[in-house]
Image 1 (spheres, rainbow, N blue to C red):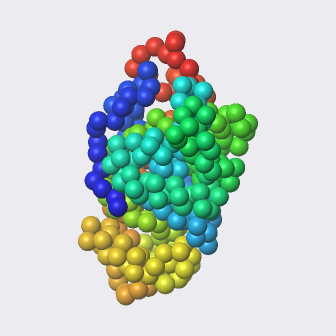
Image 2 (tube, one colour):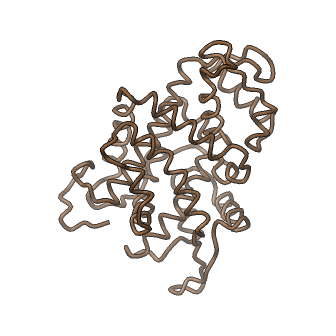
Length: 320
């Protein structure tokens, strides 16, 4: 089960950028991105891209259901591709150290999620040659391809804001760069709990199964011909649940909690009319900006764009 988020006590992982500096930079980056005049368009494209990838793909939704499962998937990739930096790969205990250290979920939940990933062919277990008591959790090409596509959503949005950077082109480039990108993502992963806890109401959708994609679907429906007004949408729980493999009851409870937090107004039963209130726009834009900020940080770190990163100390001796 999910447990309370923590905001400190995370170990330092970079010799040039402290956890505190990285946290401040990411949060400041969220604010900067949201002030970009093209951010509204980028956020809409992000929502539509997420809907295209996840709609009708029940197992993908299950794998990336909440922030804890997302961190588990990214931790496997990050630890696997940092082997050349003195680590020997992802083990159950190393992944559990990340999820329990961030207080995202219990060690048992982490182990169960890894079992799920193995059962559906996203990871394999191989004997750890350096310690035969352990098995390494290795991502399959299926996982790498899937996470690469999901990452591409955030980078496409970043390209809308900074077209000269060609972010998505980088992630679609050589496998060598992609491996460096996933290795770099280990560092920003450790800021997940700080970002969620400090961004207004983000926790509600982050920890709820399917919360992120349901939010994207809800926001993508604004302004469509079927809407009553620009901010009032038809979001029938039965139909939406069928699209994303979650129950009607689960969506109803999520929307009830969102209404209690002042994010929406439920005008008709079953989600037939939902009024999207301004605070929900903030939650959505914060979520999108947080994903873009993390992707930018990881891209710049993988590409060694130190002039674009919040360096604490000179990186002369540092290489990712």
